[in-house]
Every structure is written in C-alpha cells, then in structure tokens.
Image (cartoon, rainbow, N blue to C red; front, side):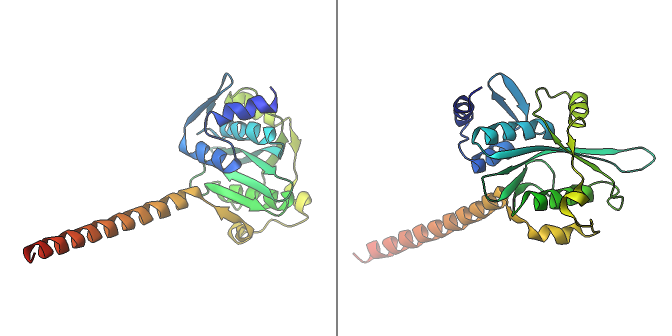
Length: 221
C-alpha cells in the first residue's frame, strides 16, 4: 500500500501527527485500517499499528521485541513488543499499555533509547536482579497470533544491549531513566480538567455576585 493511502486511512481516524497517533492509541481499544484489525491493548498489535503510520511518515522505524524468563520455578516469561522511531534528529519511544510507564519518551540517540528502555522493561519483571534477557530488531508483523509473533520475532536480529552501548547495566534503572524527556498526555488531561473546574467555579461565583448586586440595585431604583 502506498504511503499516501496509509496516511489517508489514519487521517480518517483523526491521526495526522505522531502526537495524535499516541493519543488515539491510549484512548481506544481497537482500530480497523485497510482490512486489518488492531487490538491496541495487546502490545504486539499496538506496536504494528503505530509502526505502519510512522513508516508512512518516512520516519526511521525500528520494531523491537523484548523477552525475559525470570528464572523462577514457574518459568514465567515477560514479553513486550515496542516501536522506536526517529524524525532525523531525536529518537522516540511511545508506550501506550504498561501501567506506570505510559507516555511519550525522547532520547538523543538510538543507543540511549535501547539502553534505557530495556533497563526499564527489566525492572518491571518479577526478578529484576536477574539481568539476562533478549532483545530483537524484527520485521513487520503480518498477523497477530501470539505464538506466531513470538516465533517470528525470535528470527529477527538480536541486539546485545551491553555491546550496543558499551556500558554495564546497573542495578538502578530509575537513575538512568532521568535522561528521559517524558511527555504524558494523561497528565495534560488531568491539568485541563482541574483548570476547567476552577474556571467553572469562578464563573459561577462571579454570576452570583452580579445577580446579588443587580437585586440590591433594583431595590433602590
């Protein structure tokens, strides 16, 4: 499909910019684009939904898959698909689903993004002290069968984070994450609602004062 067709399809959903893409993804559970259904609460589907639009904007886009077995007796495995993209300058990471980590993040370089995001994902696992995990740069997902996506993602190019950054992973990913510039639209929404409520109260008070003053004035006219 040509980029123009893709952008037109997303425009019908009200998506014309990366910010609008993020807003739509966090505020909607599903999307239908050109005969494809996306469940935006599944991170593999949300990643592909965002990646298609960003690629059509001619951004540099990397689809990524993080996997970690926490080493417990139950062999719990944490998996997460996400997208990184650049507009020719900074690199960006949008997270619509992970509780406590939703937001738009910007980084100076792709290396910094990879290092910070993987440390953060590791910190969300059940055993963050165990640092062994896998990261892959993957091809576009054509279907959203979970098992197929896992198998296909493991065929991607494995990224060795320590070698990629030439840095040793520390036990304090929260300190590393201070490099992030975070812009969370949910915070904006809360601030807007507070402003609206305050403005509404002030308006009601002013109206009551004017009504009272008018009533008093009428008594003496």
